[in-house]
Length: 113
Image 1 (tube, rainbow, N blue to C red):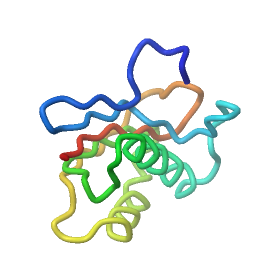
Image 2: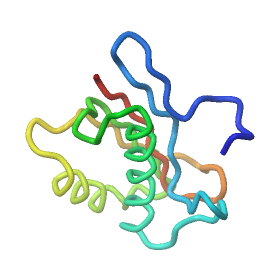
Image 3: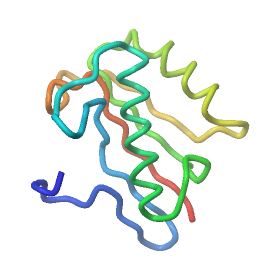
Image 4: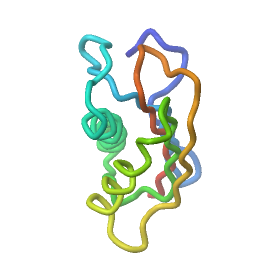
């Protein structure tokens, strides 16, 4: 999405800051349907951005989940348990009124090199 004025993932001082990755199809900018599918799409985009810098999800130390429906929390908890081993990254989970492109979820993250 090169038409945006920010870097998808920015590294500074051994930390990588991943800009909000929405639960959308990045080829069409259409929202991904389905609760778990939208969460998986957003986390998959976080992973892709980390891979561009030679890192993986195992480098995550903090994730902020923004959702348009707080009931997605149970799905997000299941995703976290399936994706990460102890100690899992710190996480914030909050409901917001809207996410660009009509997405239902966006995830921003911090990773350590």
